[in-house]
Image (cartoon, rainbow over all chains, first blue to last red; front, top):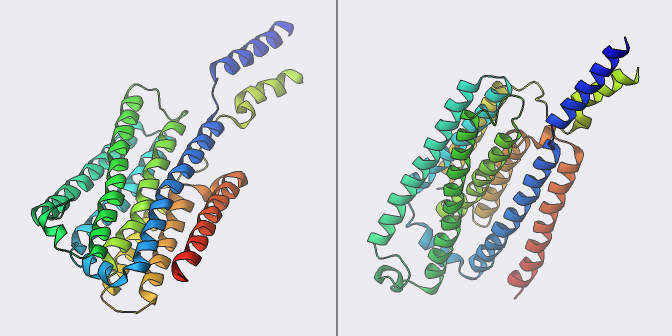
Length: 214
Length: 108
């Protein structure tokens, strides 16, 4: 009886040492980081607002040059990648590791697809001479130049986040394959997912502001 | 008796180890369908000139979409109150800065 009790105590002590981690704190840390990201992009959105008020007509003219279908396709790609991200987390929580890997790879493919569309979009703009000091840009009015400055800065910073997201999701893929992230330890994947959803969230605002308001 | 509670404690680890709460595919697919529908509607009505309301409507739809993403995809709806409080505070800070900047640029 007494050995049994000691055994249980030793076991529980063992378990305590073994699970030396803080999922709650990890999640809190991720959210705090996301808040700083929100403030970073928030500042750029304020800049957009201030210049839009000043150059309302020129912003509308400039917005006509962006192709709605390209932005629209990218919106659908990002929204769908957000879904596949969630499905990957749900699959892992349901102990279906293969499905989790499948959905995670799908998410990465969508993310790369977003960057491919972005590449064609920016190439098209460069082709029309719309780049810093470019001939297509210098012909334009002050407001249009500011519009494209904001367009490149904000979608560029967003694109950088997409690339970082791809790196983060690939790291998660490796971690799952190495059994470091697994059904009883899914919070790293959840946190990577939170980052990915933030990228989606910012695009939800970027898309109408740059592509639709003309 | 103390052994049992101790073991139990070790198992839940004072709530530091996350456990999934009935994860479901269905609800997330529903949310995705709503988000896609809202996107299609926004693009479809973009051609209609609502004058000064165009920006307002576009931002309203974006805000609704964000609410779905934050609550369901980012799981805030099912998280502890402290996460919700933090999020509301951050949104409030952003809102205040927007309004204060707005006073400057709109009434210049």
